[in-house]
Image (cartoon, rainbow, N blue to C red; front, side, top):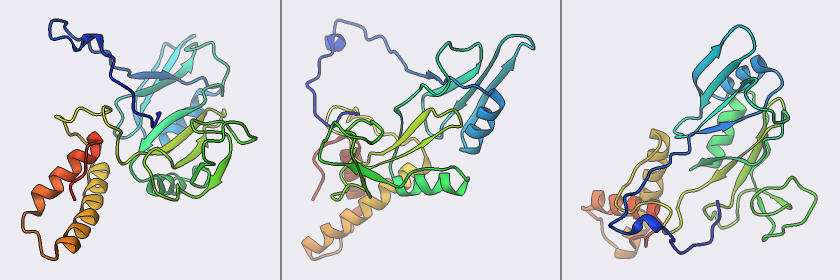
Length: 229
């Protein structure tokens, strides 16, 4: 989740080396009460993929957050980790206020939106990626990667919403533009619409070619490229 650009160091980038895909798809969540955890994650609106119980000493449940390529599993004899010990689990959203409201509407307790205190890494607040001093409200400049909200499951496993609207260069293949959900696509359209309105103000005329402008803006924004003006 770092916001600093990093030079690519991919040994498979050599044209003579075949790339082996490695898809990160499962995170194990330690819980003490399987049915209670199942009710909680179902209440979040996550998709229930599996609930297998051998009737004796093993049970595994799998849920997937909306638009996610990674799922969680929990159950009986699934992990030796202490219930509640999974912390810093990030859920990336394009509109943190909307994501927070969606949980509140489902009667899930969640913090106010917050941001970090200029990279202070020591403090009394719950640790998260950018420091341990939480400042109320979203990032003042509405920068990508900088606004958060957190919540916990009944065992205390800790989750964070992180708002990302524009990826840093190199984080997304610029030749491929995908959106995880209709909500993400709609949010991208709204940002493109607002930016295009400023573009028309600068030019002083209506842009009849707005579909191409929108498309260029949305692709550049997602890939972390230079935005059209």
